[in-house]
Amino acid sequence: TQLLEQSPQFLSIQEGENLTVYCNSSSVFSSLQWYRQEPGEGPVLLVTVVTGGEVKKLKRLTFQFGDARKDSSLHITAAQPGDTGLYLCAGALWGAGSYQLTFGKGTKLSVIP
Amino acid sequence: KAGVTQTPRYLIKTRGQQVTLSCSPISGHRSVSWYQQTPGQGLQFLFEYFSETQRNKGNFPGRFSGRQFSNSRSEMNVSTLELGDSALYLCASSLGRTSGRGPEQFFGPGTRLTVL
Image 1 (cartoon, rainbow over the protein chains, first blue to last red):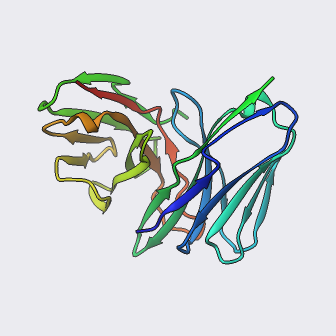
Image 2: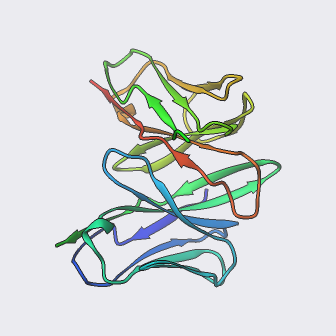
């Protein structure tokens, strides 16, 4: 069973601060995805990282995939209240025409104005 | 393009009853996956359907079942409801093609099921 551990579980910061969320696994995934979920809605895909060591930037968000493809991090610069939400990482494994996503339990981020 | 829709949005049932949830994927998407989300366990994969066939299944008891119709709409059924089945049930649709980047799934807003 592949498990994804996310830390921290909860994070409350002031507007303008920086933060990093971590996603770790003992297993190797083919790719890793990050989602954000807001109350009353389903998760929305932010980014997919595939290559070990890959770094992707999405405005103030920076995503990194570990060299061994077992861990990932999400860094937010100058957090804003609109960044508030539940951040989920998900590891993807596929083969023989099917796939399965394993999700971490998420990091609940609150950005206080 | 309309997003993924799920009905109903909220549902209250009692123990022992059964429930059917519905999911309409994005037009052109042939894959529908179902997930259960709870505060304690997070998002857990239930099953995936592609072209009316169950292609993958998570680790849930046989009380949880699903099906997909020829128009790609999907339903999931939970029989003999237990208190622990209270959760947000999410469905996600995708094109279903295998690729190196993994599935690009689009989630619906979910059905909030409460079992009393």
